[in-house]
Length: 214
Ligand SMILES: [Zn+2]
Ligand SMILES: [Zn+2]
Image (cartoon, rainbow, N blue to C red):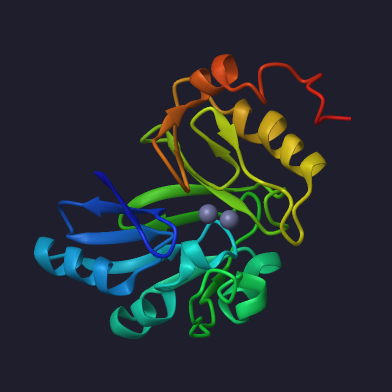
């Protein structure tokens, strides 16, 4: 079961993956520790993993407190690790927040397979919005957490430090859109979508010759 909770400074989606049998949960991009803790308490869940899609404060503001309170594992790509440690890199300062530094427990790479809350995830390296962006794909559930790479009929911005439109387009066309068309995409902001919907309706992705791609 996947529950979606927009939270934090600019309403990023935090996803909680819940295993009803073991009562374990994994959190994707938790930006508000108190909000996550009250959900865990209400539902009687133990948080075992935090999966981070990228370095930005609006996706990881709650990580340090959650790790301290639950002793959960914290996973991020090495190229975005600095976002857990540095206010400038995470953009905490720009978003008006205070970053409590936090060391990740695991650095994830393209192709890694993770087991969290009883589910299996493949890590896909998808830079472009940031240089260490990743997606987490659950083939059994036929879905992926895609962070700020792709949104419902939109794509992630590339004007922030380490953003790169060419890399983003590669990540979108050659990685994310190569997933089976029925896979559900859970983005970092806004409503969920599917691979097929974005292939047909996303104005930035309908054809590879779009003006951003050269
Ligand atoms: Zn971002
Ligand atoms: Zn974001």
